[in-house]
Amino acid sequence: MRRETAATVERNRQIVTHITEGKADHPFRGYQWVWAYLKYADNLEINKKRVFRLMQKRKRLMQADAKLKAKRTSGRIKLRPDRPNQWCGTDMTKAMVTGFGWMYIIVILDWFTKKIVEYYIGEQCHGETLAGSP
Image (cartoon, rainbow, N blue to C red; front, side, top):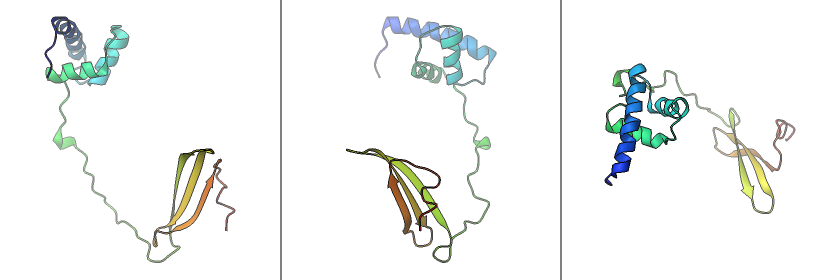
């Protein structure tokens, strides 16, 4: 890690004073709120990364509570098709094609066979693009 210059240490000391004052009023606010407060209320030109680094160094960041962490387990059964053409899924993306510009790519997949049932590639994308197709 690089050593801070005397000017940087002094500038950081002033910023830390502002951070401490802001956190005294609102102890549960995060670094983004503190940054916005410094930038817009105190009119300091400061980077979010500097605020984060200074708060982290002085242990002013909120600590995550492991007891409050959400459990990511599914409470329902994952349905699976048991024959072709039972369920289909769609996917759409946009890609830059040299000489043509932006092109839309829409794909309809059969969930059982994982094969492409239908696709569309074109310059425009409308809701009825695949509706009239066989």
